[in-house]
Amino acid sequence: MKSLLQRNSMRAFILAIVVMGGLRFYLTVSGSPDSFVKFFSMTAVIGAGILFFAFRTETHKQRFIASYLLIIPYMIVEVAALSYTWISGRHTIFQTDEYSLGFPIAEHTVGHFIGGLTWEPWSVFLLMEILWAIGWLIRRMRVIF
Image (cartoon, rainbow, N blue to C red; front, side, top):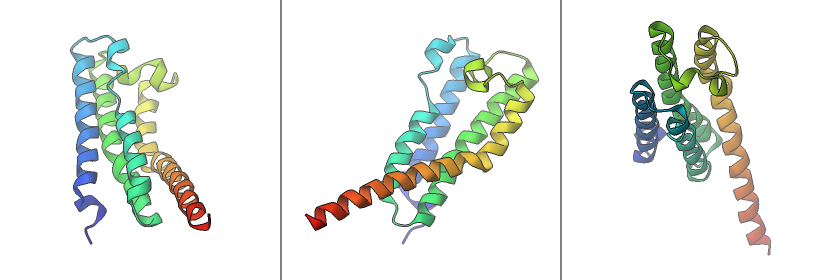
């Protein structure tokens, strides 16, 4: 059996997250308005990955690994884009009040790095587990009735 990272589906999601983040970065530094750029969402791609892997993985361990594999590329793009904003002083969508919750750039950047290794993948894992449990209950109820 292939490991989760060897599966084409995981590779596709990782690539989609990085491409979406790169596109988002390109659009914001090229001067596109935030009101347009916000529709290029890595979170939406991760959301699709959560749904997909909640039902396509067989074990809790695989869902846990999937949660990290979905968040790590997001965190890398976020930290890189925030670092660019921090170093250059140029506005990007990555450091707006809507996304930074009012934190200064330094705290926001470090927060993404720490969050990307801790609570963010754990939150994704929890969501996948909840979805998996709902699916399991529905399948179980079909067997009973």
